Length: 171
Ligand SMILES: Cc1cc2nc3c(=O)[nH]c(=O)nc-3n(C[C@H](O)[C@H](O)[C@H](O)COP(=O)(O)O)c2cc1C
Image 1 (tube, rainbow, N blue to C red):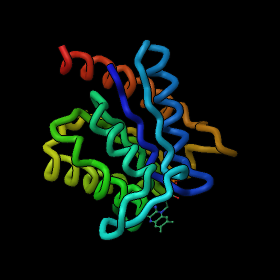
Image 2 (image 1 turned 90 degrees about the vertical axis):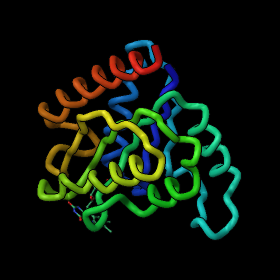
Image 3 (image 1 turned 180 degrees about the horizontal axis):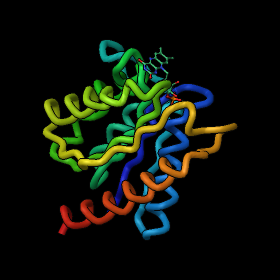
Image 4 (image 1 turned 180 degrees about the vertical axis):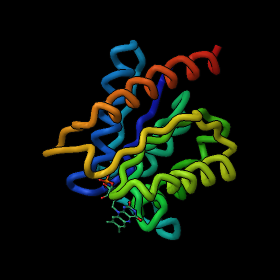
């Protein structure tokens, strides 16, 4: 299957990017084809200005993907700014696709913030979410490395389930 991983944070020291990279590694080991997109490499405009070439390319990659994994940072108990722009402008090709969420937050109390991404994807494009997310906070990382064994275990479980359910949905 062809999985698109969109790391949606533009923070220089993004932790959700590290979650996305860890899941990418696991899925590649399972033989999956991954297209990895780092939002930091996409010059972007908001919805009411023309899309950049990189945004048009992402829209095409969304259309081509069998399923999608989205990395988000929590901003004000919701999805981070850049990710919202990319959802608003590049996701029309995501209708009905299976997706998963990897989330980095400052603190544990923000764990329900991923529900905003669930709402956007389900209400707008009738996407089907995997009923497991990876949620990590500042204390789960040290110097750009995931140090929490619990988060590492969840990454393994997430990858295994995404791989298994994703394949079944394509069969
Ligand atoms: C504008 C802004 C708003 C934030 N709001 C929250 C918040 O509501 N809850 C929270 O737990 N962390 C919040 N944070 C902290 C981020 O979620 C945290 O730094 C996380 O690592 C961001 O993901 P990233 O590292 O992939 O960019 C906020 C950070 C910024 C810059």
